Image 1 (cartoon, rainbow, N blue to C red):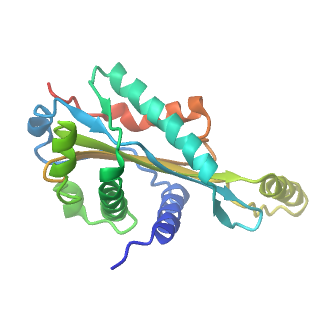
Image 2: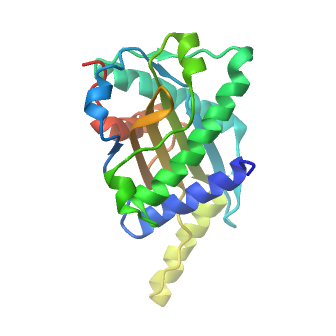
Image 3: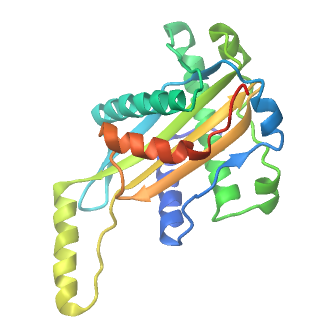
Length: 243
């Protein structure tokens, strides 16, 4: 089956909205049964540049991907990841990809996004598989080539989505409140969703630790302070690596 990035973004947005709507926003991380033992062997993790999709959410509910905003968001989240991990005394190296491995990394990140969606569906809900949550064993496939090239023993992946409401949509939300004050019924368009997932992946592609947090209208990944707040939230229970 061919991976469809656009379809994935739509699925992730819908899933995050379900988390919020039903009060099931992710509050805990997921960990491999042998995390504590294996984490001690992770002494040289490599941070992959964050994969961030930022869309403009119109008054009509149309999501339009903005490449310029994506680049800003990636920079803000990358800086926040480095600062937060170093504050936890984790020696981290940001991987600088050359042309020779860009395509390979794109394929690996696509696999991570697909596996991330499965983790969310089956260990957070709404299609919960209790056994998957209890025995958290997921893999994105071999990453030994990348690890050897950068002399790393694990990779840290970051994927996020953000929806920024247009002025027209905000005006529509305000109008809905005013109309609701007179009719007693408020039907207000939702605010944009922001979600961020982080995973520690070791050879041969095993996910040791995973966490996702989402919010409706609470963050803006284009803004350094906002991005840092969300990253700090996601990394709150980040494992002790190499210790």
